[in-house]
Length: 284
Image (cartoon, rainbow, N blue to C red):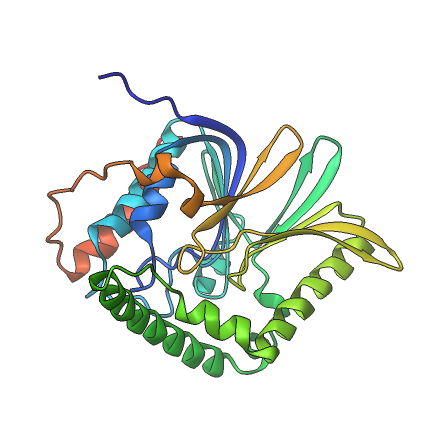
């Protein structure tokens, strides 16, 4: 049987995967990645969740995502890993380059005569700046809510009902959360306009978005890649056009079969060794 042709994409931006946590939808992300052939891939922060990482929980699908991404490097895809708050320990490696793989804190792209400013976005989070322990506590609570959500959806499935997102419902119903998102978008847009950028692209807040924001000083297109915990979204750029990719609207990706890797009994030390080796053995 002939292989299905992969969809070619000039630029893909993914953020907030949170590999190593119960809420991560690694299999869905892997299915998506298997349907595309990106020329450039930007991993915009919180890809591996080093805040909550536990070697007791590292499913095969999580490692398969890492292996697939390093495989893209071998096939010629240029990859930039922009650091976020949950993988902030990588910030000390900013500037590291290995072949087509780069680690940075931010990136400015030239796209058909326009400038795109890409960064994770946690710099705008007050809890990150002044109360990191509070932010980490909130992350643990968020992960607990995701676990509860998994149980609720299991029960819903037994009764023939569709899935729901408790965390999304909580955020959408709490005025303070809505205000935070609006303030985040406005702050990013204002700074981007002051610096003459045409696009400002973030992650961090798990809220996929694409819209024009106008101030008295100018206009900018604000984009957010969303996440792979609640929304299962990414940003794609082709021929001067941006779009928000949504896994829920992609039956082709949903039909992709994931090969079960027999190598699934790694001990605690081997997990980290395998993870590091995936990046260090990439061909230049």
